[in-house]
Length: 411
Ligand SMILES: NC(=O)c1ccc[n+]([C@@H]2O[C@H](COP(=O)([O-])OP(=O)(O)OC[C@H]3O[C@@H](n4cnc5c(N)ncnc54)[C@H](O)[C@@H]3O)[C@@H](O)[C@H]2O)c1
Image 1 (cartoon, rainbow, N blue to C red):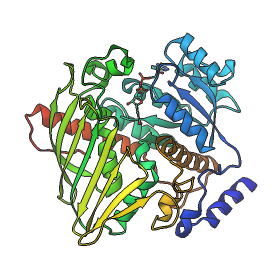
Image 2 (cartoon, rainbow, N blue to C red):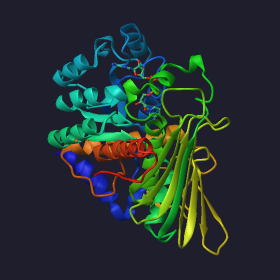
Image 3 (spheres, protein in one colour):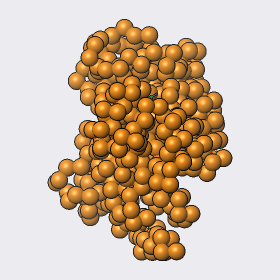
Image 4 (tube, rainbow, N blue to C red):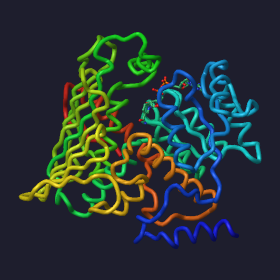
């Protein structure tokens, strides 16, 4: 079948040993995949980043959507997204059923709605046979996350969790440098995510500022679930190690709210190395300050999301080395394949989203074609990672509620 041959040819040419040459902007099936959205309409925050990334990736065409819980907003937003009227839905359940019936129905759905809706919506699309791209945190409870993981396994569909920071070229560079021994044995790690938006009550911050602090809606933690999961995921991705246990304290350092806007988390990695994970949304002057530092017995690495093209590396006893995103000059093939413009022409957050959607496109196209991708062809986060995020939140909440005792992360 020509389809499969071209797929095999693609990976034959770009085998694991020369993975750096693989062009992630080439759709594997020779066409774009059909994508739908739940959420993302006017007034929503993250939907526009997803849709920008999907379009830039060249792997997706956005053809259907239930873009808002408000029908007028849903249809008005669909018109702006150039979604045909008969594929703009006011109800995501109706969308899952109708799209599964169509010969040209969507092949994946992006779910960009608030946390407490993720479980039901993702389950409905998986049951309809549609692959799922789901924003974090996966759900609001560990039991819902376990159920979604089981459903993903039972249906054999793909679930991609959207942790975009892991798709920056220089995060990939750091991850593979660590795998290749650049820092030696990891001895400690610090990761932080600092924002300012919750410092004072700001009425026009949008609905997201309200539901993020509502324990009825988001579960046991707020900032720890919102940006703590990003910090945890980045740490896990870059170091290749999970957090084994945590000792957490939640605080309200900004405008009075029913839930925490700040968390201080001491942790131990699987190898016993200690570290600190600090997240806050109440630090004036901090915009999107996701920063990670990893130190081992042979060197240290430092990456900052606000300067995503730069990776600082200091081999012990030597001068520091600054790696700048681009081709050559020490950039590894795994990072080169996430790089698109020459050095000096800036790439940032939307490019990371595009890389995520490109890797998701490769994984979903391969599943649809029945082709098993060689290991390492794409580096995505799946349903297991979604569950891990929920286990991290739960352990932090347990620790905080117990007055700061050490709590092991469950499996
Ligand atoms: N991956 C990231 O970097 C990142 C960044 C920000 C937010 N998020 C996550 O994205 C999700 C959405 O966050 P946000 O800040 O965009 O929220 P938001 O409140 O700004 O937007 C939510 C969107 O979902 C729509 N929606 C709500 N219920 C719906 C329903 N039943 N049917 C259809 N649409 C519905 C709303 O109309 C809106 O468009 C959250 O889970 C959040 O944690 C992820």
